[in-house]
Length: 379
Image 1 (tube, rainbow, N blue to C red):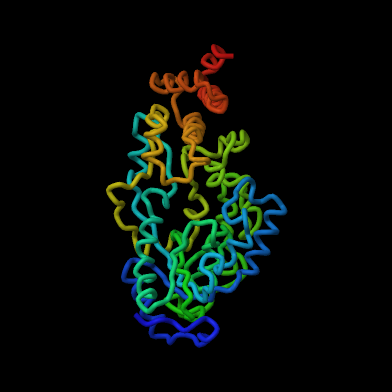
Image 2: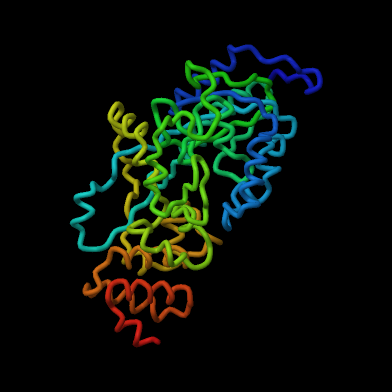
């Protein structure tokens, strides 16, 4: 197996032939776009993280905010890193249960964000794996990283020319939209930068929302006003974060949660680029294990072990199933029928729970459903 020259002697960039091969490998394994970027520190992203953290916009979120210096320096992942091969995995699929059918169900259902309908991150890593193996075959080191505190995936994809930062704070791929997960292969191979299947027009716009034109539908569609300005998200208001955050679900945002149990897609659903992409290229059928909805009463009846087995790939605060029950009770309060016997039984059980957080949210749900009588019996 050929060995790369020591770092201090290997200053030349590898020819475009290998880059083209890596792009072709990634595309052949399902990546919608692949690009190459250098592994220098993401200084602008570091400044942005520090600024937002100082303003409290991250709320209790620690992801990439816990150690911004680490999550913006690929060399902390792989000492001697020279390049990133960045890929985008599309997770658009047909809804597993059409809306008309969801509304006809007798038991209340709660929505799951599209990216979590199936284990899309596993599919992304599987698609990146042959890219890493190809680099290793030439003696280079390569590490796959995605959805990890170690790297801001959006920043890597932007540097690789895959897209621009939309006003919804997500990365949008030209003509394809934002229904993508992002990941990188960090390597010590000197591959150059901003190459690959990124897009014919080269680097995409840099400023937040600069590729969105005058459109601001995502900002006005956010149910809690979490998009405080183009590209700036206040996590303290974002439903996608609040369902993952520890502690009580903020009272002022419980109504806005609606029938959601995990994640929120509103800012993506109203995006004209996403809508146009879906018309041009309709989503593929959902996988058999896809889970677009969760039976709320079934969730509230489940044991801790069953909840972790079924939903363990979700981010659950402290890996504690009580937070799934918390979210389910809020969603039940927004969607349930207070006169339904099964719903009443679920509320009674939750109101008798020894956990004060569960009883708090059960009381809110019962009152929302007009069952103050249930709350009064345990007051």
